Length: 89
Image (tube, rainbow, N blue to C red):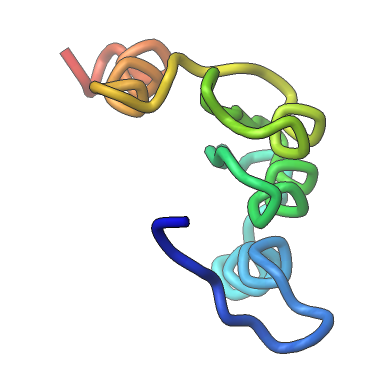
């Protein structure tokens, strides 16, 4: 294990994402989320566009709406370039 998440009971990344969306006045349908582990599943299910890294865990893959390239060496960069080519050239 290389890390851990410490959360209050009943809260997860989806709780945080929803609070941020509420604060910004945005809809979940307009959000992009990326994750790779069980701790990301709620966030991936909530976001309108969600991606699990190809080397992610089954729980995250099941919650995500699509797969992204493997995390290493530059999967996030590849995903960003494909989603927003006008920004990431």
